[in-house]
Amino acid sequence: MVDTTFTDALASKAPVPGGGGASAYAGALAAALGSMVMHLTIGKKKFLDRDAELKEALSAFDACRADLLALIDADAEAFAALAATWKMPKETEEQQVERHNAEQAALDAACDVPMRIMRVCTRVIEVDASIAHNSSQLALSDAGASAILAKAALEAASLNVYINTSLMDDEEKARSLEEECDAMVEKAGRVADEVSAFVRERIRR
Image (tube, rainbow, N blue to C red; front, side, top):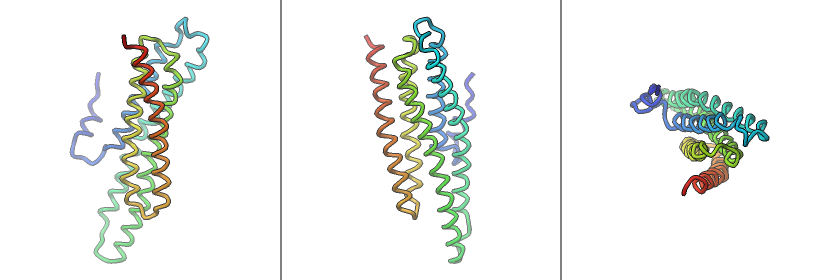
């Protein structure tokens, strides 16, 4: 049942997929868990009065999973474009300038993809928080696991932003991206911790 294509590629010496793709994959797993929790909850007598809300959450999880899976390839493409600039000739001063300018342009996309991964993971965590109090007890551990995985994906993706901003000439842009990263990690991370703490309290003896 388990397709190891992605993890085999990740384990190889190939530069892609790498940390960004792994972050998106982990986020997709988090979203998939959220969808599972909703499928196990929707239709239960206890939650019929919240049917519309739960179906909306399911739709959000499904959309996040699709987005994150697409971002695995987007991350590989962005890194490949950046890596290509490092192979450009640099024998002359003109070539060095051209190579450097190409690198700087490629860094924008290399930062954009993990930022998008982070935003989607933040959304997964937000939906996890909304369903934690409205899900089947038997699936509650999965809701907590979803939040934990999404937080890990969020933090992992942030590292891919930071490593690229460190190469940027535009310090103002780099600082702005890093501040947005910091804010998401802090705010969404706190929400994920609250969800996992709530779940632990509910399921432990």
